[in-house]
Image (cartoon, rainbow, N blue to C red; front, top):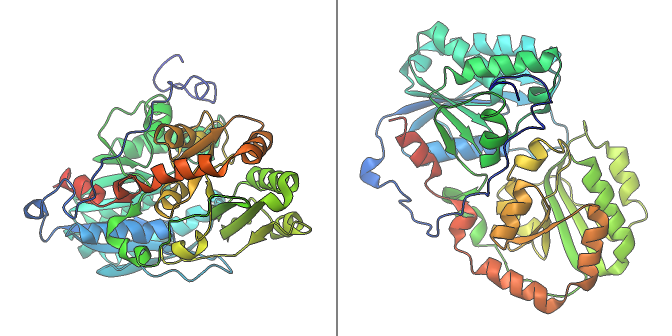
Length: 420
């Protein structure tokens, strides 16, 4: 690396060594680290979301309200046929910004301009906001532009839950995207990430970022715990057939291939259950159907509502598949995914890749196992030799963990207190 802002994928290879994921606190408390007397009153957040139906949008909005702040949601929607209708965020108001599309930035840009115009119809609310909270770079541009045109002086929070592949491309679009993000970072009061490696492997070495940041992990939000705990069965029968669950947004074609190889190798001693939204940009429905065809030990349950359906989809699941190759060597190696925490809460041990943030976390916290390449061979060998006693011992350790390992009670309150 020749400087803090050298461009290109050559510097991606020179990223600083990853640090271990932080050890969670060991107490779930209704007050977390912020007392009720410290909770702000009458403060307002304008939340800009990229997809109103995305579960994490509702998760963030609910957490803001639970922290005692009012919130208005400015959100786009995306056309996703076959998806389970999502519950709308429980906001004080919702301002629709229009329909947008996944990944196709050329088609998305004009729609962002329309979103700015629609947000400005509520310029008085923008001026009244104390904080503008944005999800991803697109929404940061929409929110910052609309807020400045409205005359808002609100503080800007920029949240990044994935480092999109565009941001690490060495070509002109990638360089432009990084330059735009540096510009946004320079105008943000706080950067929010879901994994420490995003800071250590991208924001500091690539973007030269030295500002304030906050870790808000992809845990199940504490105020929604009641939706799942009354129906949750964390017990497991510690014997084959071993059941592997791959849940969430299904994007990783290589994971599908590896799971099929495991199913072929182990036959009746393993079952593999898929559930969630199929990302057709990455896995075509025909490819999924061909993979399942002739494999009676593999099944796809389809979309589900999160968190409402978590107890049902995780029922009887021994292992949560927390493997991703979509951006191998980059985002896939840095993230700490939702399924890591959801699986642990629901009683499933994690299967992960070695030399990734997820793998390091699962091993260091004894929440599962991490495997070297080739993954199909190493996981197959592990399941062939796994004894009921070894599984029961690791599973008992999982059940003995405090729920704060998987559940976030005060993360958003702590974040907003930093801005108060």
